[in-house]
Image 1 (cartoon, rainbow, N blue to C red):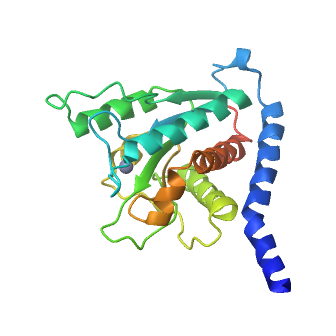
Image 2 (image 1 turned 120 degrees about the vertical axis):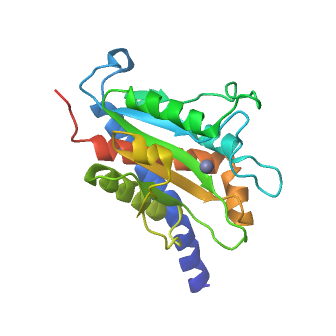
Length: 236
Ligand SMILES: [Zn+2]
């Protein structure tokens, strides 16, 4: 009985922590300017990049779930939190309407275009949202990859730590430098991370990643880590 009680308390811990994070979001929102002052050049701008889209669905789960759709759902939820908190944000895509022509589509051109968009944002801080995939179903859990440079490393480790402590206490992965072959993290000139939220090849990750509530929880964590990372940043 006692053990079960303790287990229940342990099970509730991530939810409690998330609730505390939400309070921090509200507190941080008070520190930020109201919506009408958005666009100030002296403040960081969150650049939300929902990976893939259009003809490029990204990874495909065994049940037909497209990575690009989950990336977009999480990205749109993060956009709503950005609006709520009143900080500047920019999205590389807000729907699936572009890059739909299979004949003219080029993945490289898409990445070049996204990178140009990202680099055009003053004082950008990039979160590129993706889902992982592995040939076997065993690997699971989120992992943050960060771009070269101290700022990206700091942002990446912070975000990874919050994803684990708030949502996945059983996750033993660590934040790692993004491989050089990853185009966006290699080419952007702002602090940048790529968040692999989970594995579409793992049934348990997949069912959670499809849940609206879990997508919101991930967006809450990303929102909070952006606020925390930028809390001491002004560019005047
Ligand atoms: Zn991807």
